[in-house]
Image (cartoon, rainbow, N blue to C red; front, side, top):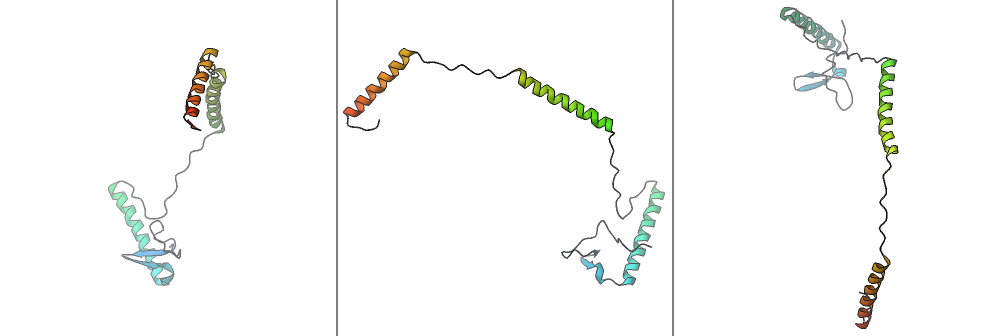
Length: 140
């Protein structure tokens, strides 16, 4: 008859990290239980598991037992499968990177202003400054 773990998946743990049993609304630290109480709790747990198995046989469907839940086995991938996936990913990256290097972005040519247009703008700026200085301003 196993004594520990009692109610392992659903047992709450207090702040001091002591293992506890949930008794209605009260939480009882397992360290405060006597040996007889622990043995009685273990016997009750075994009875519950037996009754659940019997119920599963009667209903024809397996009932999950109270206790530690077994982890699912992880599926393992073969080395050949991993190699195929890696090769496919490398091909995708090569395709993306290949497109980038093949078509370089074309820089727009700088627009040049004609000499006449620059002279016109310079003359307008000089006229504005002359007007501002005549009015006694130091800024526009």
